[in-house]
Length: 71
Figure: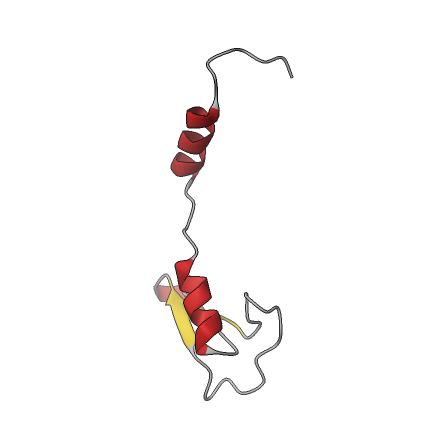
């Protein structure tokens, strides 16, 4: 398991991880334990929609006009 004590919302180091809220992303050896400075930051993190390559491609496709563009 990997552990990060930098709150991804504030960018600050979490000083007291024994009392800090956290989330677990993944499982097993690849799991990531993410600590937060506050419950509000944890809630903000959980509201972020994860993007997969498929959803990114669909977003791009849906924004195109169907006209070829030269790069």
